[in-house]
Length: 116
View 1 (tube, rainbow, N blue to C red):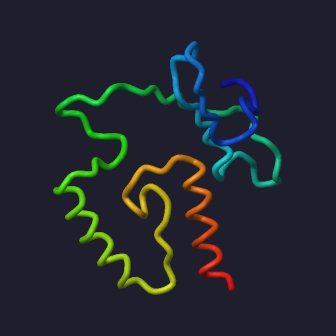
View 2 (cartoon, rainbow, N blue to C red):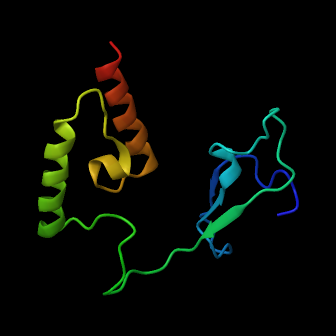
View 3 (spheres, one colour):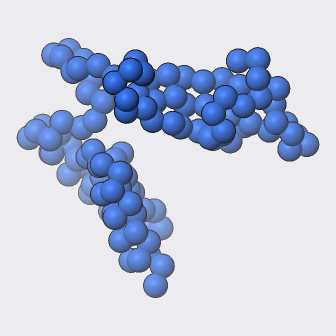
């Protein structure tokens, strides 16, 4: 886009019925939104995410809690537990979908455990 700022942060979620997308990502806010002097870049890039109902043959957005994926998760978990000084958390690290309130609860519990 021919503007330095579209929404002022990396991700905005949309939950209203009228908006056809579920999220807009403005990529510059993740890391590369400034030039070498710290000035905003004159342009920005956004992506819109559109939800869709899952159907056979699609890759699921989130892990499906079935026997196959539970077995796969246990294999990943065993590998993760062998790593020193790494905390695997969130939807990808724990291989499950979290609502935001649960995400914050789990993050605070992890921080309390790691930061005495």
